[in-house]
Each structure stands twice: as C-alpha cells, then as structure tokens.
Image 1 (tube, helix red, strand yellow):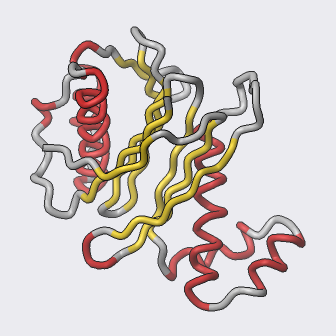
Image 2 (cartoon, rainbow, N blue to C red):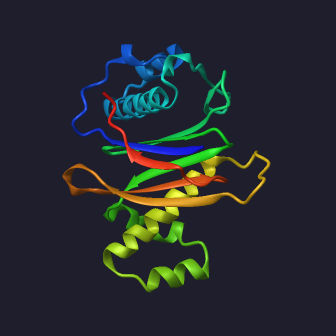
Length: 197
C-alpha cells in the first residue's frame, strides 16, 4: 500500500498543538521558533494524523519517535511515511510495503537560480536547453524534488526493486502550482487531496 495525501494550508486555522496525538511531536512543534515553519510543520503532521485516521480509524494508536539522525518513525506498526511542505502545500506519503520519500516544492522563478547546481549531466543539460519559460521551471523543480524524495527514501535500505519516481503537479490557492515527487519501490494506490479538519 502506497498512499499520498496533500492539503492546501492557506485557509487552515493557526496551530492548536493540543490536536497533536504524539507527545514527542507536540513538544518538537512547540520548540520551533519560526512561526511560518512551525505552522507548516504542524499542518503536515495534522495531515498525517488525518490520513492515519482515514486508513485505520484510529491515528492515536500509532507511536512515533525521532531517530538520532532526525528522522521521525512509527515505533509500533509496520508503517513508513514521509512528509514535506512548501508554502501552502503539505504532503504525507504512507507506505506499508517499505521505505518512501516525498517532496513538494512550489514551481516558481526561484528555482532558476539553481540551474548550475541541478543540471548534473549532459543529458539533463540538453533536455533543459530544449525547454522554454515555464517548462524550464517545471523541469528544474522536478530534478530538485526527485533529489529530495530519493534522499528521504534513504540509501540504507536493501532494495528488492529499483525505486521509482512518481510525479504530480497540483494547483492550490492563489493559482500556484506545486511539483510533488514520491520515491518508492511500490506503485501509488491513492493520490488525493485530504483536508485536515
């Protein structure tokens, strides 16, 4: 099972940390001093809880802790997950069949500044040169998101199959588009918007 959920946080209320079931995560969220980052981190965790409620009927039964390398893991169930946020977009990927990495990024002009850093091969350079305007932004954003989702997927796992990248462009508030990349050995069963309530 590989399910990916996303939400638009533009109209969601300010964080109410009492809604976070995991004590460790609640304490972590309350320690974030940057208000924007705190709100994004809160909303992406709330999305994870909503997805778990939807899938199992009881998100409170899951226990989470943070590893020494900073990765949040589920400690009492065979559940792998990956979270990401960018501006008003939050994404939660859930997998019961192995590691998963997810990344979301707004598609905009800012990515063009990273052209030299992101184009790592003659093939990528050739593809990029054949594109124009918005196509270049999407392509560079896809390279960035794939790199991030592969990193989140991890290099310490024994792969039974070569991991695949799954892509989707979503449009949220203010007509902004976001690129989503999910790295997993599995195929995606569900990709849908889920509004945390």
